[in-house]
Amino acid sequence: IRDAEAMLETFQHLASTDSGLDASVLAAAQDFLGRRKEQLTAEGDSVGEQVHAVCALLTEALPRIPAWPLAGGGFSMIGSGLERVYRQGARSFHRAYETGAPADFHEWRKRVKDHWYHLRLLSDIWPGVMRGHRRSLRDLSELVGDHHNLAVLWELFAAAPELPPRLKTELDGCIHARMQALEKLAQRVGALVYAETPGALRRRLKRYWQSWRK
Image (tube, rainbow, N blue to C red; front, side, top):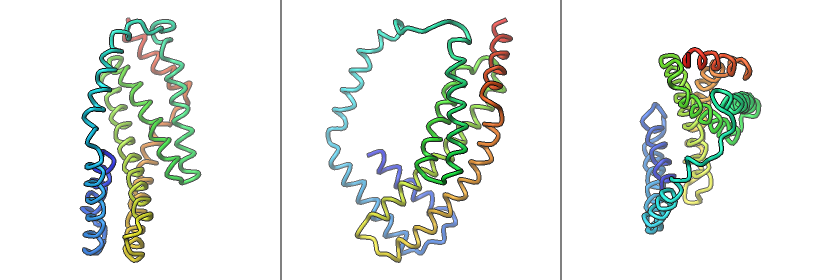
């Protein structure tokens, strides 16, 4: 259900920009996505029950969190994971622009979010600097997330037998032009985010940590 809503929102945002799409194309695409959302919503009557079941499981698991085994203490407890995830992100960044494949951009976004979550754990070591770093990662995640949503949207349109070829051709051009624009924006931010080597990032943040602890 959330996916159907996201696709509708993605198309509406695309249509609100200077897309150049014909009014009949906009109407047909909007109608297709609206009917898809209605159908999935009608099929999801048990969603509320599923949510309650998951919440019950989470509540049951909550008391066990203090007993989770954590090796070491201080910065050493998170340093290796921080470095590993940053390295994975840098590799995913370069792979996405080497292949241009939407799936690789989606994988890169996952690593961006991992790094973002790590830095949230380190918010206090230098609040102003860390806040700016996290904001850049959030912006980058949104850019690559929008790219992924457009890729999924195009897959939906391309596979829909009820949409005529002329309409698909117009949508194809508009969607991929927007994806290319997002790729350029994300590349600029990504080059800054991954400007350091993973080891250098770890050493720098460790020095911040040590100064903060003192």
